[in-house]
Image (cartoon, rainbow, N blue to C red; front, side, top):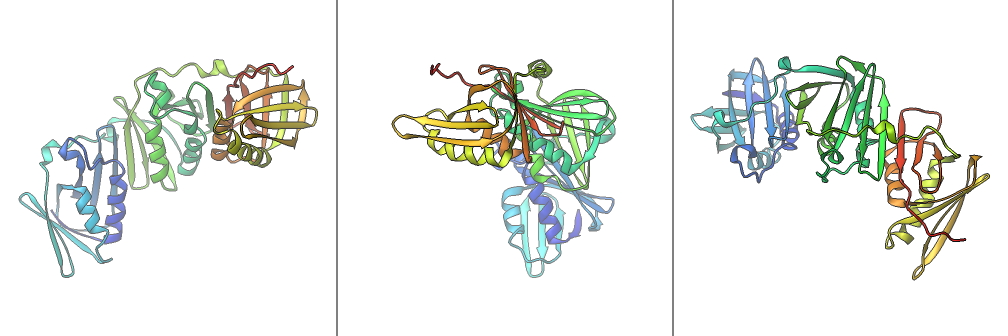
Length: 368
């Protein structure tokens, strides 16, 4: 292999694949990145066997096609400190030589035959297409409600991709709350796929603008955009029938300013965070009273005007779960419906149907 590449483009590619590489992996070859040069382009790959990232760099000046696996950490650290000038990469036997003006480094490479196979798109099924920014927003408005490091039951660590005719739904839950977002997309194949939350959060960090295509094959899902792709193993578990926990009736309904609710709850959260994060909400005609009480510390109350329908209500929640939702969802006004003080609340964006948040209350002693 012998190729000349622009330093900035090469560094960008290394940064991208590094997201999937564990430099301390017990499997030595997984601490490396596969560099492959063919047909006028350079391909970089990185994987930890659960997740893989690939990106292409075009154009490059190819003198000789070939490939090599380099130990990424030290290689990357050196490249990012190089001047912004073209780089020459050349392999000879089991060494890779990195050259620039007046600079030359050599690196031992890993055996090529030991590197894991990446999915081949021609052997996959296209599921749907949409815009990167739309999918990114759906991920942001959903994954926060899951439990990414909780593997029992396994579905808690995943987000459900429920692909329906002309519509994509993402759903995540930690058993105390559930977030659902839905949007029209170009659907090629319907189905339900459980994707690790940690992978989706990484995808949102690295995905750029433009169109994203989503494929599946052999227990894996692949996200492809511009000159890059990310693949991950699917979670082999059944997501519960989430539709059954969405109430279709209510006894109390309010519409309220999202900013006012978030500000009030954030202030109260400083008071109640040492005692279970519990806040109380009292709803009467035209007003929501939010309060927190910590006997050895103090108490606080905030009143917010609301549009009100139905019956008065007293209910309590973990304020952290409320604030999580507010920090991940862009909304001006919230619609909240309740069936009682011990039943789940449903929170949506006022006037829109693309987002739904279900939150379980906490029991409070009878104060009467």
